Length: 53
Image 1 (spheres, rainbow, N blue to C red):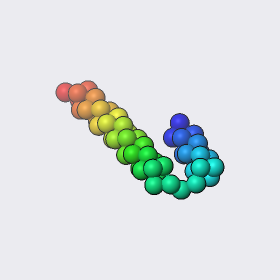
Image 2 (image 1 turned 30 degrees about the vertical axis):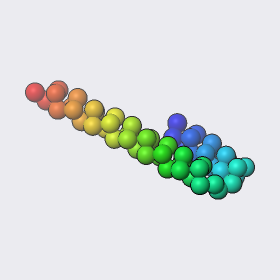
Image 3 (image 1 turned 90 degrees about the horizontal axis):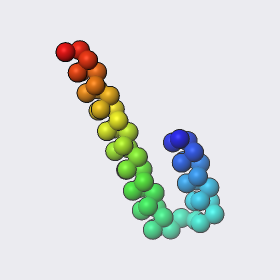
Image 4 (image 1 turned 180 degrees about the vertical axis):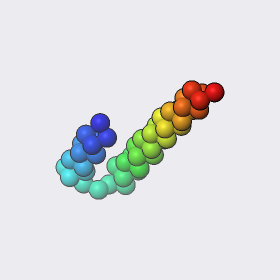
């Protein structure tokens, strides 16, 4: 899924060109994606800890 997003963003970047608004949106999307990945990892760690008890 992440690969598809990266390919899509890079394709849009080629057609639109580097603009400040687009780069800001890109950084925001990357931040949200990293946050979601970290939340998923933390929830998996929490589930593993509960199973040990």
